[in-house]
Image (cartoon, rainbow, N blue to C red; front, side, top):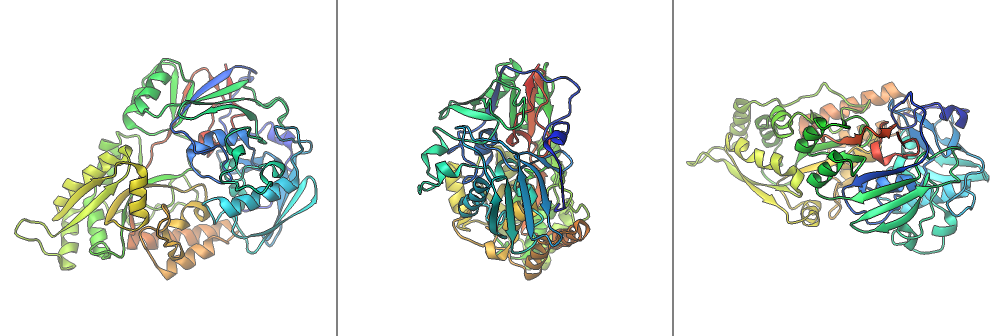
Amino acid sequence: MLKTVKLITTALAAVLVSGGLATAEEPKRGGTLVMSIQNTPRHLNPAVQSGIATGEPGTQLFAAPLRYDENWDPQPYLAKSWDVSEDGLTVTLNLVEGATFHDGKPITSKDVAFSIKTVQENHPFKTMFAPVESVGTPDANTAVIKLSEPHPALLLAMSSQLLPIIPEHVYGDGQDPKSHPANSEGVVGSGPFKLVEFTRDQHIILERNENFFIEGRPYLDKIVMRIIKDGSARTIALENGEVHMSGFEQSPQNINRLKKADGVTAEPEGYAAIGPIAWLAFNTVREPTSDVNVRKAIAYAVDRNFITKAIMLGTASPAKTGIHPGSWLHEPDVESYDVDLDKANQLLDDAGYAKGDDGMRFKLVLDYGWAGIKAPAEYIKPQLKKIGIDVEIRSSPDFPTWSKRISNHDFDMTWDVVFNWGDPVIGVHRTYQSSNIKKGVIWSNTQSYSNEKVDELMDAAGKETDPDKRKALYSEFQKLVADELPVYWAYTLPYHTIYSDKVGNPPGGIWATVAPLDRVYLK
């Protein structure tokens, strides 16, 4: 939500909840937090790479201008205060004085300008800073961001892993920032922890930045991020105390097992900005899924409640639109397509798809790309058989194979998981914008969905600074897209943070473990 914020000081920030859960205990200094992460990141620089794997270590190594609390309110971080002009076209950041990079060089407004430009030119989320025309640097501690149009997502885009402040004196050497050696070795960051060692497929070791710009933080001496790709192995390590914390856990079986374990907590809160939604995507230009009545018939045949309760074992929540239920912009009052086989069959009859002698109307191929989505994919086959659709389940041997097929629009239906990334401008528009129908780009508009009115609503909502008007625009958008159904939204991924009772101030907020862990301590 874009709003004017003035003179919020770092002294106030010290007593605010900054992306974590409040605690009455006095934090203790020292100790090594052992946490597990699920994949080996390509590198450690979030300025040129999206994704959780990069975000978990990246937000410890690099600070953002802002951080967010659990109420979706921006809080000071590297920027001690900020101001948004009345017309929404100028955002001024006032940086903390005396902040330095890990090599001792000062963090200045020029580094902020350089970081925004680097993200603009290299990050896959092009909409985050698309309206930024220039960043002025009238002095070392002031950055003045000029916009071509109001951008209500801008403040959120300057938090967490979305805008890491990287050093111009390192990355401005003419090398490609996407392949810069400082992305993985000798990282010079701006955040609460410094890189000690990055050993692929094994661990990432971080140590306290003694010169961090928030006095007395971080509380931990070290963080050891163990790369444990197997979910069962992570669960055992959490149960026996080898690992103190693990974020983004999503296996229903493992979550429910850990809920019963002694000495650990399984916390579902904290992922609202990630906004993970699982859905069944349709190719809207290939017959027969190009017919909206076919898509609606499929939706009426799928039992969302069965998926959330039986397959996801009660760990997931239903999703009915492309905006996550945890977002303040979510519209709950849309067509939910509750299971109705009679209506589904009637829609297909009326659309001219008669049943053959074998009881089948036509055949569709359903793709899925990773093991975690296998059960919902296999569930679709017997459900659609009930309405005369013969479904072939096609798994891919690896993620790149699935990604190539879907991004080249060579599919009928596919199960997918897509993140909101905090604001619809960042993570939602990309799925529905007709201008984002691009072959070869995964998590773009791979459904080839095009509706001029939807484009207009997103464009208007993406620049509307009045919260009520913006919410109304996105409400209309969600209702319209729910009627045309380029995707059938099924459930929110049941992300949980699992942490030991020894962990104080575990990460909460809206960014979970892709937020800075400077407030976390060991009891």
